[in-house]
Image (tube, rainbow, N blue to C red; front, side):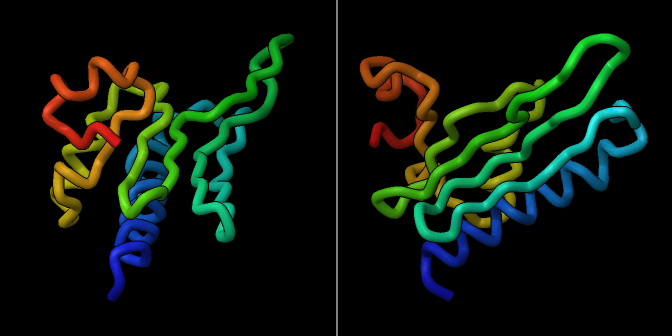
Length: 113
């Protein structure tokens, strides 16, 4: 399996596992969708729906695969996603914490770009 396919499968597996494990705790009035742009290698787990009078819409997670690395752009949960990716065989040096400013990435222990 090539690197891109391995990363794609790891991200999609994470999303599916997250939904399976947390579904009893998730708000039943909110829908969760996995969005995958095959051409640009963008992945999101999106929440949308109504909670009372308030519309809920936004990503829980957003990943990109670029330059043969997984870029974690957004994690709006307390979940330690990078630990789960590494447990699934993703090398720490192939994960970029894109939500960190470039000058801080070198101190993260993960890839810088």
